[in-house]
Length: 171
Image (cartoon, rainbow, N blue to C red; front, side, top):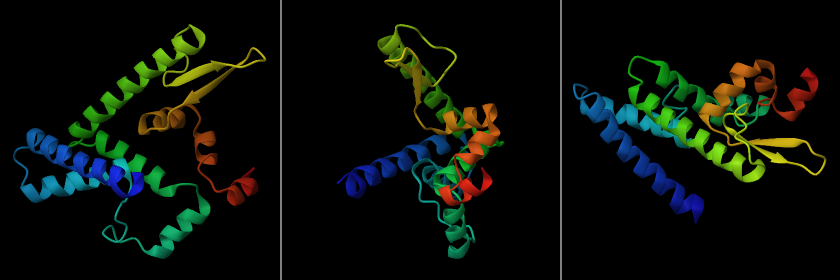
């Protein structure tokens, strides 16, 4: 039910909202460009990038899947971040800002509830005290947290995206 109705319904609703957002932000754009940008943006958020439309072969995608974990997720996040940094990225920037603010606020609330401290050293994570006195940090995966992880630890970020077979060879 979740994958058959709920997620496709959310994806369709997000597409309609993005069409509205792009039309409002870029009123001079022709309608076909608005729909193309909204569709690409929606696919970057929910997955389902149309590889054939982009001219990528199934063999190339199979290779990416053999070498890395969740290559579709990683590429979608990179495409979304690229979109937000581009000259026509106002809609994506606004969306990522809201996501970052909501995630940061949720992490602060979670930290106060679990440890009584804000734990500002982990902006998007919740530090949960363990029995041994240490704290374990749990972070929600999002384009924002992936970007922060990449900026803090490029090697770790890349290693975490390799398939186990490739990762063991690299390590």
